[in-house]
Amino acid sequence: MPKRPRDPNQLAKMIVDIATGELGDTVSESKKIHNPKGRSGGLKGGKARAAALSPRKRKAIAKKAAAARWKS
Image (cartoon, rainbow, N blue to C red; front, side, top):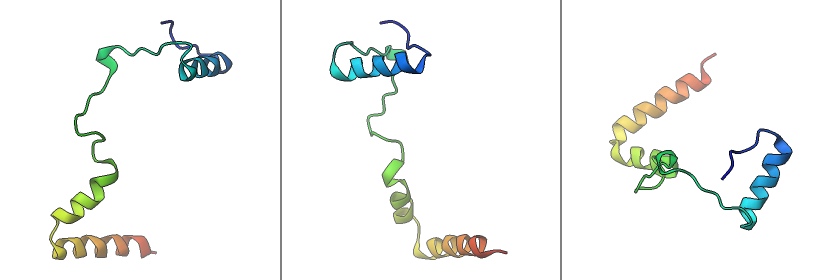
């Protein structure tokens, strides 16, 4: 597989070719990032952190954030 072109028009053509299956897209194994759990943190990060905190600690963090937000 040739290197990805720097020219935006040629790159767009290559992307379309890959998306339509006309050109195979190969990434070397060393460049693949494999995470068996999926996204690290991502959508569940804040909820998981909040569930792990005690209500008292969560309230303290919320007060500190509100104070910083409304600080003049």
